[in-house]
Amino acid sequence: MSVGSFKYASTHSPITSFDIPLTGPTTPLLPPTTSALPLAALPSSRRTYLQDYFGVTLPVTHPLLAPAVFLSCAVRLEPAGAEMAMLLPEGPGSLTTMFADWGQGCGSEQYDHDWSRLLTCYIPWVPVISVIIPRVFTPGMLTGTWVGRGFEVPEEQFNDLLAPQPSEDAPRHPQLHAYPIPMQFHLREYHAHDRSQTLGCNDSSQDLGSNGVFKAWLPQGVGMSETESTTPAPCGSKYDIYDPVTAARRALDEEFRPTAPFSDGVYDIVLTAQTGDDFGSVRGHKSYYGRVRDWDGLILLFSVETPGEPSLIFSGYIQGSTNLVGRWRETATPVDLPGWEGVWTMIKVE
Image 1 (cartoon, rainbow, N blue to C red):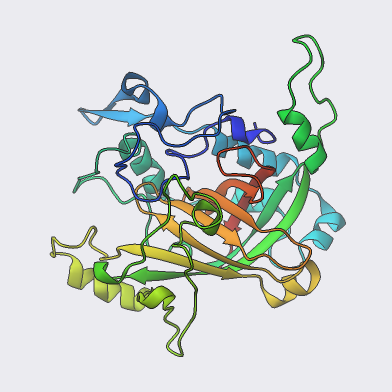
Image 2: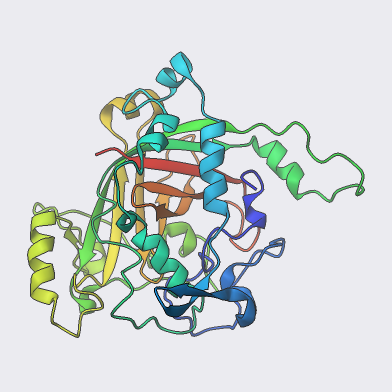
């Protein structure tokens, strides 16, 4: 599953749609080779099961298996000792150590976002209206330094996965090798607090590639710039850089305002990320832009293309409040076809 992850659902609704609830076709655009449909495309009778929760019966959707497999893959494929020190010159050197530390001494509240997704993210044609269920993403939780790995299978071997199997009895790709690629970046969030100043998006079926999903849902021709006040101004829209003190004050001001989607008053989140100086001097400097899908908290980043390095997109969820887990893929292949892809996992370290 970690190698041929394009065949399995790893999101609650396909990444081809940013604005949810959906208003277009009844089935979101899916690669034709997808054998396991996302929950959004399943019949309604198969999307949920009933769960007794302190005397209340709730419809709960099925957890996605892919993120757990991706985390397990990351630990099993991790190099050790001096080899890891060379691969990851900055930050903790062991994913196993970080995963072991993660969760110790923490309460169940760290899983609130995961729980909320299971309660609400299975019918993308119906708006979520609830004053009880916690938000699937807390603004500000991405801001900080992240370290981890991407895992890739050589592109030639990946292309073999797409070839028809000669016969049912023939062995299928016995020599697949996944290699760890160290990742590190400092990530910042920018929040729109005025609905009239938010960006649009480009997720129409006519242009899902170079100006849609492959640009992290940012509208066509959008550019990113930062003013002296560290406020980005893409296409004339206004997004304020996340600051925990200001955010806390704003949450109190917005708490009793019914016009805000949540008490924090955040209508949209745009992301920027850059590799650190030490890491970049060894592995190369990279920049990323992205966005957070409000419906299920899906994070989508695209890496700015550099000489000798193709542009990639990274999609995933925050799992357990501190793990960023998902899939990456190249952008040369049309979005409705499987492209060369792999797994990425990261841990927030500061």
